[in-house]
Structure formats: C-alpha cells, structure tokens
Length: 187
Image 1 (cartoon, helix red, strand yellow):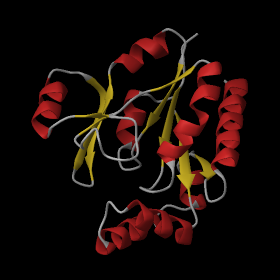
Image 2 (cartoon, rainbow, N blue to C red):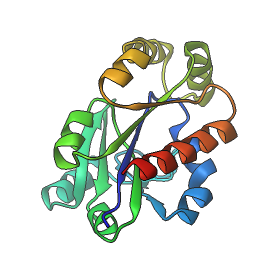
Image 3 (tube, rainbow, N blue to C red):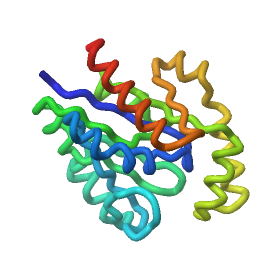
Image 4 (cartoon, rainbow, N blue to C red):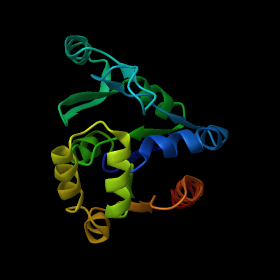
C-alpha cells in the first residue's frame, strides 16, 4: 500500500512548526514521517526544524532535482526533499509543511494528497507574529490581509480539511491525529 502525503498549510505564525513539534512522537508512532524542509533562511533561525542553505546552494540543489516540491514565498525559497517519494512508495505517510500558494502544483504531482489548512483567529495570529519578531509591522499587516482571503468556505471549496489552532497546541495536535486517522479509514 502506498503512503499518503499530508500537506499542511497555514499562514505564517499560525503555529505549523509548533504543531508539528507537539505531534511529532504521536505521528511517528502511527508511521507518519515529517519531512524537513530546505529553506534559504539561517539554520539558527528560531522556529522550524529545517535545513538552512544559501540561495545559491538552494538553486544548485533544485537544478540537480533534489526536491520533490519547491517554491518561493516571502523572499525565501523552500524545498521538500525527493526522499519523500521513497517513503510514500514504502507505505509511510509523509507530512510536509507546504504553501497555500503552491497547493495547485503539489496537487499536480500528488493528486491524492490530503490538504490541511491550519487556521487561527486574526487577533491570535497578529499577537503571534508580533511576539515572533521576524517581520515589520507593515509585513505583519500584509500577512494578515493575505490570510483574510482564506476562510472556511474557500477551504471547503478547495477540498481542504480546516484545522483550528487558536487554542491549545495539544487540542490542535489531537485534531490533526484524528483527521489523519479518519482519512485513513476513508482511503
């Protein structure tokens, strides 16, 4: 049996990295691998457990076919290593931290992916972005405006599972595991 690609998306500051870290052991116990992204951001940057590379290194890896998926957003380049294809072929579920803007491309390569959109109440998202301190006020407002375009109706229309992360990370983790389990039962 082939594994399933679980494509987690959400606005910057929605808690994707926190959710993945909180659910990592329970996902592993269910045979789900979390793929580490390659990002053109310093490996020392606070947040995601990713591989940091220079833009030139990223371009070289991308040209060499090292990525199953790759995209650019917010002035950075992101890549999902090609190794996910081996995991999927071996029957393992693979969870990736994806991009909403790149979803249509991901669906072309993985038409059966399970799209999960992490949502957060706007006030909670604003506070998280401010606390994180990575962006200017203007950049935060741009991110909030972009996020306002994605709502429950658009998620449903696009066939995505909506997962709220406005409350505790434990609750969001429980809901993620339940969603993955329910989608396995339907497969």
